[in-house]
Length: 191
Image (cartoon, rainbow, N blue to C red; front, side, top):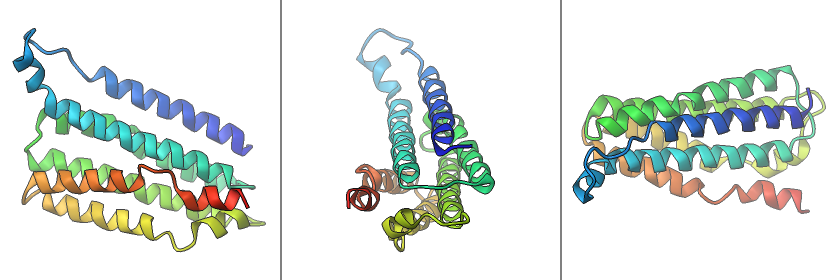
């Protein structure tokens, strides 16, 4: 399989994930501002999840753009990432319906954590492909931002049982940290 086919398949799955998420948004029951205000927690969770999916889509594109070779392991690692991303609509809907509840907030964090773990596995698999991917290796370096994200997700999961608002703030903080595409890869590709 070529990396182009892998990227096209992933783009299609991610498009379906976003479509499923938006279909979970329901119109307000009343035609006034109060009805709209009752949907704010659901809308906030949708926006946050949309940003996370967008971040993964963007960074996945950059990752594959810097990759010269893929192997069978990378295909499975990519499917592993897509599996966890496919659970984002479920936890988004659950957390949106119960914005102050610990369990949905923790489940949201677990899915985000596993997306991060799966992305890291994909990255490591691409770095270990026979013949290597030297441009990708040079671009990624120590991946401090990726490791910090995993730590923050783990922290937020625990804090969801103490104070869901703090966990939400951490999820938002990680999203903001990744909102700008990974410049390391862009810089390496433009050398």
